[in-house]
Image 1 (cartoon, rainbow, N blue to C red):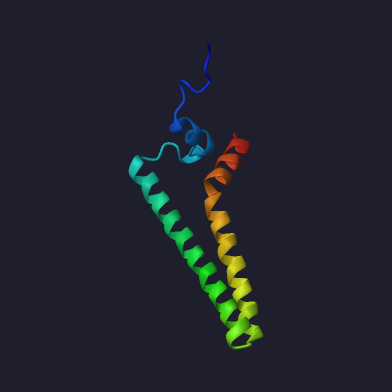
Image 2: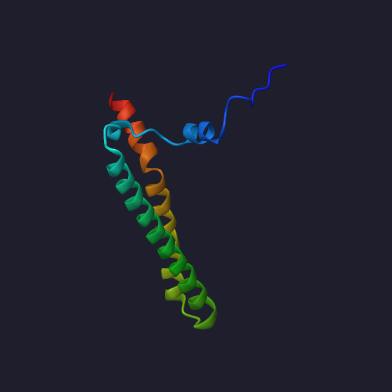
Length: 102
C-alpha cells in the first residue's frame, strides 16, 4: 500500500508557495530578515490606512452626512488594500522579472 502523504510535511507545502529570493538569494540571513521586517511594517501601515478609511467612510456616511469624508474614506480603503497587495506580491514579482531576464 502506497500513501502519498507519508513523506511530506507542512514545510513542503509552504516552501512550494513561498517564492525563492531570485536575484537576492545571495543575501545573508540578517538582510533577508530586515527586508521581511520592513515589508511587514509596510503591510501593517497599509492595513491601518485601509481601516482608517473604513472608519472615515462610515462616520462620514452615517453620523455627519458628509459625502466628502465618505468619498475620501473609499479612496483610503482602495489605497490601503492596493498597497497590501503590491507589497505582498513583491517577492513573486521580483522572482518573475528576474526569471525573464535570465
